[in-house]
Image (tube, rainbow, N blue to C red; front, side):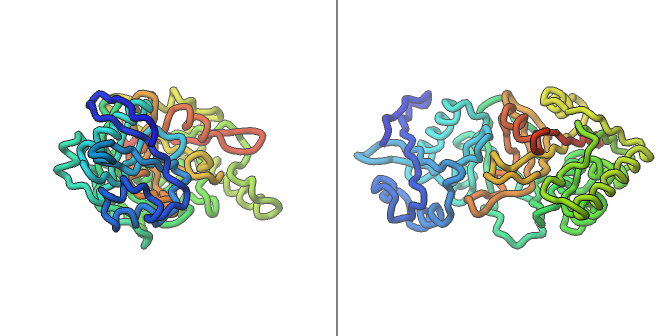
Length: 365
């Protein structure tokens, strides 16, 4: 066990790395004495290695008085409590102190075992349960909780998980309009998701201009602007020959549609400062649909749309409509997700030698 750190709550703690591939039998004896077998079994059921799993342990009684399994996506500014065992309030205080020491802006808590009362007593607010999705994959716990450690937090939108591997652009646009009050939450379902994807797709991905055009067609009263610092076709690096060319034809057609519909296509890069200014605008319900690579957060370089809808000191808060259950993620990881400014700036530059940024700014009114 590492040397405990004194914390403001006067609860000492130690951070103990989680051994890759460790199952319940490999957990420390100090943990096995305070955690139920079914909890340890769930902890070891998936390989959480990509999210740097660690135990935040509170010493006491000749061993550990409390412990929490903590994970987080790389490049982000949060910590997630999977479970807290033993003296749960002490474990929660220790994790919050650890997060503050690491200059993280948020701690979330999956509601596998914690009660709403215990979470509230530790300063955590309940998260809205996710909207019903169109996928049969397990979505995680029915409840989750959040505590902001920097700033005042942001208003919580609805969360919806995309039902395919390619409809993230459509889902982010729909979530933006739900948050703006243009779309009713209960109408966001698989039919709505795939219908908008069909209007926006470049087969199978949604490129920025096509997505902006689809949003304007669907909601003519919403202001839409596209930022893309290239005139060349995008998201086609993995294709060649005819497979690349016919998609390029569709992208040129989308630019012509944007011109006819009055959707501005700015041939420059939306800066991070401009992005923050857009979503921070007082009295407005503006959102940025941002194209990012999942290389940092998930370990594979795949283009993916996220919804930027708020800011806190040092981070932009996004909704990610996809999460990786194979790495132990649940909707709690993808909802109200703070991404560090520098990380978001880097992960939103896509391409090969020439890096470009694609963004769609939507003002729902």
